[in-house]
Structures are given as structure tokens and as C-alpha cells.
Length: 201
Image (cartoon, rainbow, N blue to C red; front, side, top):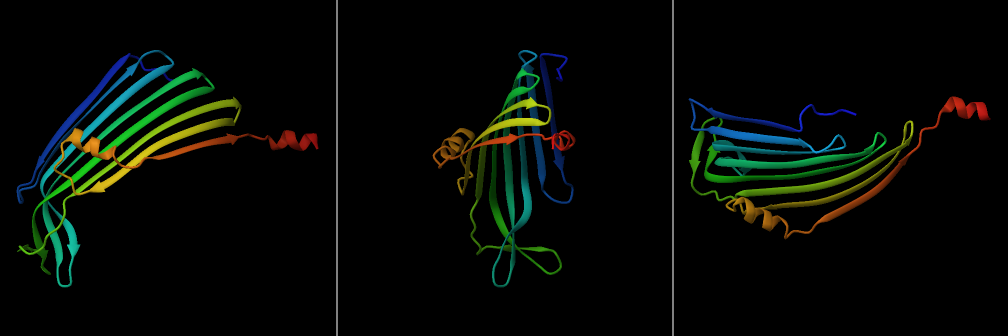
């Protein structure tokens, strides 16, 4: 069984990028603490945040034009994972992940054949707001070499709308108003030694 050398470990980093030929800027950071309560139980958390301003990208097509947009993009990812080892052959693990990504459009353009962009003042589009939530609980019992009993539960929620102006907690409240999906499965894996089986017969 692998053991961390320290009870508490913390990793963090950040970045900032700018471009000389266009107004696009990008920055972000991540923080990831991990704590070992005992040799059997550990818990870790990771948060990533990224934001890009004045990004140009494809939006849509109409009868005569390919539409690009000038937009601001941001995304958050929060992940929690933990594991408890009852023994060397039995363990319970938890994995939680929430992803939130949003796109705010500032202006729209037509893509010309030479690759340049011309202002489009007539096109109207929607901002984008996307959320996904997954919570997985997994129990594994290895009762014999190569043989396992696996019980799995998942709770998941997905949502896509145009509410990109919400703050983090309002967005989370809006997500939990959506319908939830529940999945439960049990899998039994048994290893049969062909040589021993052949000797019996």
C-alpha cells in the first residue's frame, strides 16, 4: 500500500499569457491540498480556474457568412477525491467533480475568404453556460487472487443555458434545481485457473 511521506501536501501554480498581435489575454491558477488522516484514509481537493478575455472563435453560419465572435471565457473545476482502505483487499473510494464553463460574447464578425474579420452588427446570438456534476462512490473487495466484487454508485447532473452572468453560488443553486440521475451497479469478477480446472476434469 502506497503511503504519502507527509500528512499534508499542497501544490499550487498560476499563469498569465498575453499576445502582441491581438487583445487576447489569458490567466488562471490551481490549488491542490491533500491530507492523509491515517495510513488507511486520505482526502484530496483540487480547484482550477481559467479565464480568457477577447478570444475569437467560431460561432455559427448563416446562408452567406461564417460567423465568428469576440468573447470572454471562464471555467472552474472543483474535484474532491478520497479513499479508505479497510484492508489490503478491501477499499472504499469517493470522487466528486463539478465543472462550470461560461462564454460571454461581446461582438460578432463575418469571416472573409482572406481570413480577415468584418464587423457584423445584425447577428444576435446567445451566451453559453454549461455545468456538469458527478459524484462517484466505489467499493472494491478482492476476495481471491484476480477475483473482485465491485459496487458502484453515481449521482450526476448536467445543465446548459444562457445564464453566463451568474456568480458561482447562484450558478450552483441553479444547477441543483435540475433533475438528477442516479446509477447503481454491482459487478462480480471471478478468476478461473484453466490449468487447475483442466486437471479436475
